[in-house]
Each structure stands twice: as structure tokens, then as C-alpha cells.
Length: 136
Image (tube, rainbow, N blue to C red):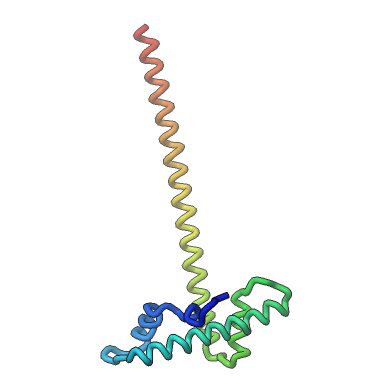
């Protein structure tokens, strides 16, 4: 758990990026407003986490899952964000699946290349052995 209140704040760079993406070009945000948004976002994350944790505890689990977060959003009366959240979660899962498949393919290709190289090395070694036998 955080020892100081400042430890609970989200990184300023992340907050600034989110703010810039949410607002039209040319809109400026003061440092004071960024700080207030940062603190509000931190409070929201803590509250959502606490609510989600309650759902996990009711289910006698120590690990929060996406369902706990969805239930927490409902309990906090943020139902209108549930569908975008589901869509974002689905996109994340697809991305992770794609990364996993790409990693598996890369590993398989590497194994093929390695076994192919090993076979070529064996063939070369056998040819060299035969060549040495012929010379003797």
C-alpha cells in the first residue's frame, strides 16, 4: 500500500496524454486543472478498485478479474461506460491473443531453423569425415 498520498497519483505524463486526446486541438489546460484531473482520476481508480475488491471478496477470491470491475462500474452507477469497457477489453484480449500467436510462430520458426541448421551441420560433418576417409 502507498505510504504517501502522492504515491497514489497517476503519472503526470499519462494524465496529460489522456487530456490532450480527449480535447480538441487548441484547448489549453492549466497546471491546476491537470492536477485536479489527476487527483480525481486517482480517487476514481481507488474507488473502482475497492468496489471490485468487494466483489472478489464476496466470491472468496483474492484476485480481481474483469467481471469484478464490470460489477463495480455498475454499482458505482457508471453503466454507460460498460459497453465501451467491454469493447476495449475484447480488443485487448484479441491483441494479446495475436501477440501470443506471433510469439508461438516465431518460436516454431526458430526451432525449425535450428533443427535445419543442425541437420546441415551433421551433413557437412559427415561429408568432411568421408572426405578424410578418402584421403587416408
